[in-house]
Image 1 (tube, rainbow, N blue to C red):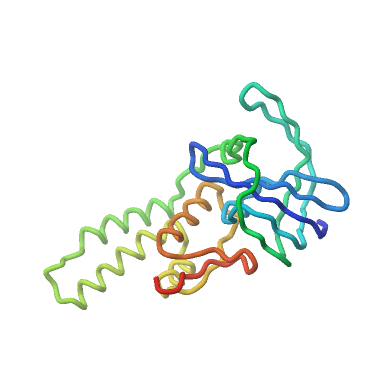
Image 2 (tube, helix red, strand yellow):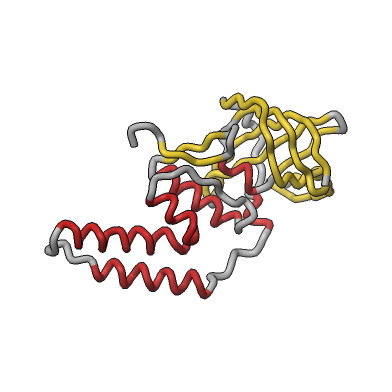
Length: 201
């Protein structure tokens, strides 16, 4: 594992599985393609700082009748000095990295949480007192977030606190977390790599 200074140019692509991001990392030892989950929460732009790289490796793929070979950098951590968000040249399209892996299997814990959600929704009785209805509605919120975020992050979201997502989770799940946070009025800060509620929301 090494840490190297560089400039990462992130571009956002709309694919069949939703929006995803890829990056070009320009360093003193060369330029590398980055396709890690961590990028999916960034906006398009140019990011300069330190990048922790687990390894470099060659990969190739065929896309729209054309074979491409990349030298990739597996980036596990990003420590930014500057962040310049804005549109970048997006003429090149690429396959969605999520298709490089098999679809995740539903875990037993997830299945239990979904069952809890269904039970909680059925239990809501809006004819009850305001306090009881609010408590039941909170149960629905917990049950809907729990299988996606886990207990710790769910608690933080319900308290409207800032959170950091773990890019080591399945990429499709990571994107789902990102999209839910955006829908709930959260905004990503590239410098801290944390999600926080927008002012007034």
